[in-house]
Image (cartoon, rainbow, N blue to C red; front, top):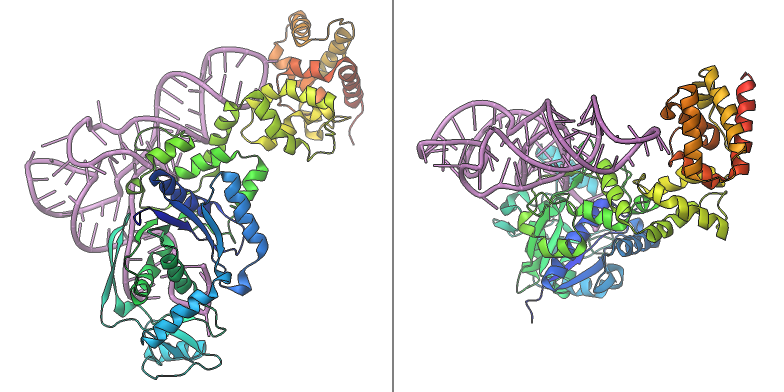
Length: 473
RNA sequence: GGCCCCAUCGUCUAGUGGCCUAGGACACUACCCUCUCAAGGUAGAGGCACGGGUUCGAAUCCCGUUGGGGCUGCCA
């Protein structure tokens, strides 16, 4: 069956793998899975000077994490140079390419003198030059002519060859340029559908011309999806925007949440649904439904998605996912006792965070030897009025006399105390929470106190009392 | 500069000529719930860039303007 869909994701390993690439990979993967075709991973590393092995590893691990698996590859263009040489030979023999020894400066200079648009003027086009040190091979654009790109998302886009320069396909150091390697590989690998970011649309006519020059029997179908942009609506770039997939993983994003959010950037299932699992995406994804305009990558919304996914986790799953984040803290030793405490508090945390990383921050007070109360809170909460001092003292006394140190019991006695001093519980919990946890927010207070244990609780309350009594400098 | 792409609330989007008084989601505001914070619930504010056509009828089709973006590399 020659008609089987074959798509490829072809990143270049020149930096952190960013979310825009991830979305392109995802779309390719979705149409492959939907059609029962093949998804091929190809590393475009023809530019020696800019590649690094670590970036390849980053791409591989990010895709794996996201659950985007490949059926073939990763192929590396750096290992396929023979193929490109053959193609080049053919183009030269057939007179479809020529050697050019113009320097960049010369090209610019002539463009300047012309007073016209920058770009190559075809100076060596008919000079029949031989390959010499410093010369590059250029593709001879058929003139006059037009090439129309039949794009699945843009429709037909016409390019006049008058606007296309004789572009370089082999650098003077002998290595192929990406358009060439790209096309040669796409032919060799039988790629039938090319889905990539819109930024590649302007080079597509060149690619098509190469496909034809190399005798490709059939052109692949092209689809150029809109790029992802930053707040200033510029194309997301790994240099100026912090958008590495790896970063999000480290912040505590769940892969399915990221995938779900990314899928919706430029596509929607056509109704009001926003939460889709992988199978639904595969079933519903349709290139014809993809939007035409750039999409802003909204981290805030992605975080919301993540919160939803976190809350859907089973309690055990949540605990396990949190472990790596707990391990980053020096107060975490991961013994049985800590594990048990965390398991008990985890459900209370799970519904309060939207990032796994937040979980650790929220429960640190349970494991730290001492609380550090920010000065700002000492002033604004504990020393705000004399009542806070009194409350902490009184509550300490009441707790000291408690036999059963449970959340329920603590709640009851505290509420009773509140009534006796005619203060609502919500007012009273603030100084208590700050004294015990060092923060104004956190898991429900009485559960926290129970987990903290009587001894620690009493100790922290008395420490807080002392702190209040000690004037700050 | 040249070529190309794009244009619905701040953002992501639904909308494929009448169902649109333009729907949903994030963010925002208010209220409810409540031991804090979240979550949840209810309500609210907020948009078809502009101008011409076509049509009985246009967010939807056409043209122009404006605005944004991409490409214009011996990067991918």
